[in-house]
Length: 71
Image 1 (cartoon, rainbow, N blue to C red):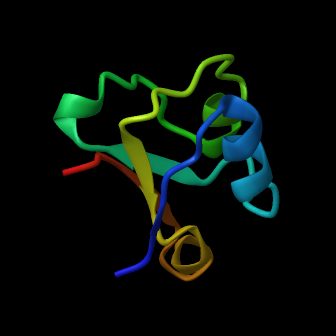
Image 2 (image 1 turned 45 degrees about the vertical axis):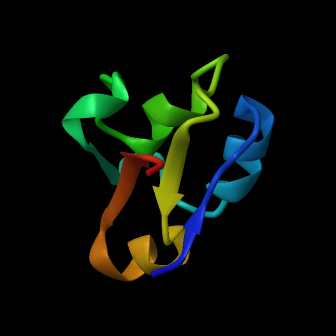
Image 3 (image 1 turned 30 degrees about the horizontal axis):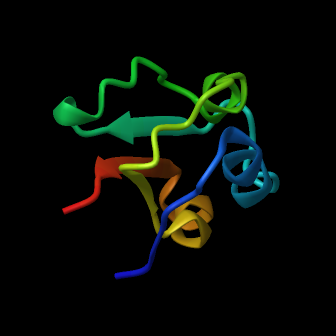
């Protein structure tokens, strides 16, 4: 499984730049995120370094972007 750990909110925006704003975001319960779409994710000013994005390139096929806490 591919995953990415953005260091900053700017890194996060670069990683998800090709994804549509209305794409659903599913964050596991222990992330502390309350966003539900990629557009809301782009609006974040701070990105916690302990969170990872699970295979954003697969999200375009599945329709969902997953966010989890790094192990």
